[in-house]
Amino acid sequence: MTSAGIGAVFDRAATDYAEVSPLLWNPIGEATVATAAIGAGERVLDVCCGAGASAVPAARAAGPHGHVDAIDLAAGLLTHGRRRAAAEGLRNVRFVRADAVTWQDGPYDVVQCVHGVFFLPDMDTSVSRLAELLRPGGRLVVTAWAQGAMESFGRLFAEAVAHVRQAPVAPPASRQAASTIDTEEGLRSWLTARGLTQVAVTRFPLRLPLDAARAWQVVLGSGFRGMLSGLEDATVDQVRAAFGRLLRERGMTELDATSLIGAGTRP
Image (tube, rainbow, N blue to C red):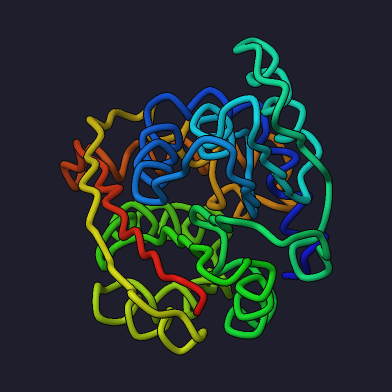
């Protein structure tokens, strides 16, 4: 899927993404900012910022003399981010519709990306370029799904879609990229290969109680929504029913959303 296509998927997911954020995206964003150790007065770039789950806490940490550039391709998500920042009275964060692969501003003290690097075209090259936007001594922080996290959920949803479509569903292209950084060693090695030093990876466990309603909310408020692209409303309703039935039959009552947070320093 192209960058524009990914942006369109998340545009359609904007309202649901914002609704599921307090349970899923916000805790992960807060944990990422804590790992980044953003200090007062620092300049931050938040890539694939979504509705501000990590950009807003980064703005809090940077304080009035710091600044956060929060960029994403999904205009709907950016609107939610602006509303959230305004509600908190944060004036040191700007939400910009922009492509990470062409963003030219800098230098930054911190560049962070929460569950977004695997959507970038040529993940290795794209993130190496983002690291170059750091000042010497600046930190790059990347959050990725831990091995196994979201996988059972994703397989069950794909099964529901395939059942309704009566055709196999190909895994998203981002999955292959994500699988290279879903272990502590994999993420550590990958960040080191981007030219970073002092690389450390921490695990952030997160498990959510799951019922059919919450499971569907996660589907609509995440990248899984892309698997519904092109389906008529009636067909989407059939997928939802099939997914709920599979959840009950397989006894899936919990969502594993464990993340890995990797951080390294530009020499």
